[in-house]
Length: 227
Image (tube, rainbow, N blue to C red):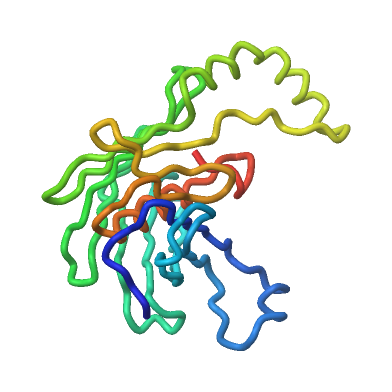
C-alpha cells in the first residue's frame, strides 16, 4: 500500500459508491464490493500528489436498536483486508447529535468528531466539529448563509417544483457545499460530489475520516447529495 502522512493543497478525494450485483459480475474476480476512497491530484494540484485507494467497510446499522446517525466504518489499505488504516465508530448518537471516535491502526485516538443534524424547522444548518487529539479544532457547516437565505426566499417556487416532480420536474436543490476550516482558514470542502483539500494538512488520516463520515450521511435526495 502507498500511504502518505500529509495532504497537499489541491488533492482531490472521490468516493466510488458500492457496486451492485450486476456491476460486480462485470468486474475482475476479487474486486472490492464496497465503497472505495480514491486519492489523487486535482486540476490545480502538483504532480507530486500520489494516487492511491482505501477500501471502506461500512457496517449497516440495526434500525430497531440504533439511532439513525449511528455509523461504523473501517478503512483498509488493501482489498484483502490485511492491513487496516483506521476505524470510525459511534461514541453516542441521540436527538440529532452524534459523536464519533476516529482510531488509528494502533488503537490510538486520532480525533473526536461531533455532527449536529440540520433542521428546516429550526433554521439550523448541519454542522461538524472535529477535535484533533493534541491539535486544533476544525469546524464545518453546510452551505453559505447567503445561499440558504435565497433558498428560503424562493421556497414558494420550490413548492411548485415539488408538485411537478411526477411530471418530470427536478427536486429543488438546497445548498449542498460543506466547508471545513481551522482558525479562519479553509482546510477542505465538498462540492459537486467530490472532496478537495484547499490547504495542506500534516495527517492524511484526518482528511480520510472527515471525508468518510460526511459521505456516510446521504440526504433523502440520493447518494450524490451529502449533508
